[in-house]
Image (tube, rainbow, N blue to C red):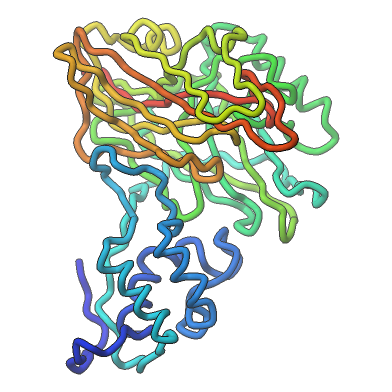
Length: 424
């Protein structure tokens, strides 16, 4: 519901925008979920004084479309899109060009409805067993924390949120599920314990996923959800849910950014659970398995190196998620793309039997630091004769460039499209 705060007098059309009347309503709706004291934004934007002091930097980031971060461009319509419209961008430009006039607090403009999802209730929380303090010697620390699922009955995850213990250093959180009846059996849980025992500190180092310090062992994992600064959690699409059986484990991967500070963190993750759902769902990864076996090579000094896979994915999805039955096709509710630091652009699309192409996700300028899940405003049905296409493009340039192949490590690369799908 829109709320009107204050009653501003009529303003001449030639008057420049002011902080109170025009800028703060946008900032509060799109910026302060990250830019608060101790928040992941790095500095607060909670008062007119704080906003005015940084008006040139703010306007530059807004006009340059770097903030609010939203890498997806030119694809389908998404359920939650917090980009600013052209009028709002022009307001920031004109305001800063005029010297950021503050105006009067009594002239406060209308409150703008925030854009974003939220989780409607919390049924189960899992917290890191003990606090972890990332080393101050490394700007980026990727750490995994295995935690046993505590539920005693089969349940369906229908919502997710993360609660960072230290918002100043937690950059993003991803949760992965290892089912009790996974392809490696109990050996995978023994491996998790071994990795932890090798470390003096809690958890173990990881990068692209939770597959260990070296990344040379691929675990049978399923992504549950992820959290990035500004997220308020989410309910999964109505009627869908991810099945979890007793004896499963959750691996929590946290990216810590300690560029300015460090300190202890004890992050928790919250789940919404239901006893049954209308449609069984999963985060289904799409990739070319041959890439993982040495057929991905990104030569040093090359730009625009692309890899594509196009095929019907039902068999692959069912292999990784045995509980799914996709004989009748499936429904795509959302997606995310995963590459590492050499990534330049990427796209996921459905190629229809009639030759038409339907984009699911288009990211023309990849940014490793902003890996979002994008929920479609309207789900896309995938049927017989359709194919799923994934393309990743890389730039491997610079004086220190070396040939790069597939791997979990920070110096390796990946190309994975994760789709949230449900049975039809």
